[in-house]
Image (cartoon, rainbow, N blue to C red; front, side, top):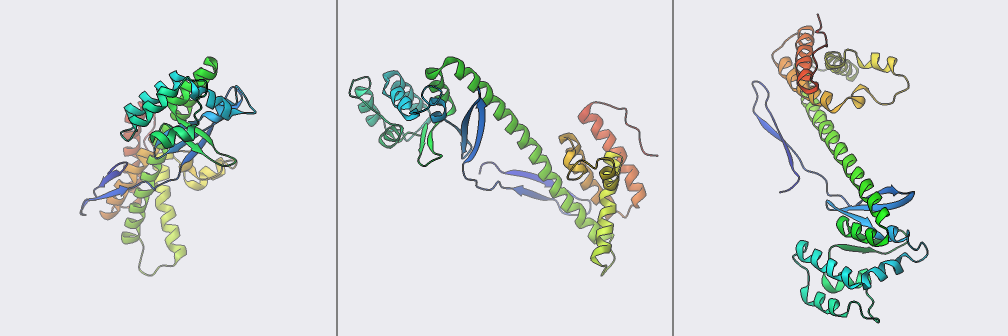
Length: 298
């Protein structure tokens, strides 16, 4: 199985268990990168990146970009490159059909569209999408090759912007993973509060007050202020204090939520837990951030 994240959780006096996060199956994810004032669409299909070469072709002929792609695919060197790429990365590539196409490439009467190439050779390096917002998409290395044919300068800017997009996506993936882990641990935390701190048959309003107090124990230990104090200090910001936390703070907060659940199970008073959690927060942030100038709560 691929792309499955497993977190092992252990609570004192409880059984160990694992939380398995399976990503949802998604349709093609689309983005736009701007290259020298031109919008170039990109598409993620099952984790594989494609770049719209129709948009790239508009840099050479805005009226007939398909004609530009057609001229590129008539070139024998292009066919050689596409065939080699498919041979390397596509186990279902049809080499017999490819030989027939290659033998005709370069002839005056030879024409080849992306759709014809895909259907005849079972190619995966190109995708042709119909419709008003369709176009021809290519795997990134093929798209870079096409961009080089259109303009060497444009290719360099395209590579730079595409690399920037992938770097931003990796940052977002890291932040989202930590945020999801924090949500899972928060559920464990609130379950422990419900079992050990809430009297029987309390009203919903009473339960909410207890939850809020426990959340603020973590907020004060981690951020030095309650949620209300943060909102009063930052009236212009939307969301809550944890939405503006760094990845390291979210990692530390996730650990603290688990530890607080164990301390609640042990019956430790809230004030003592606050001091202990604050010590843990400072120690962990010193390791994560490499500084030691935060003061302990007294």
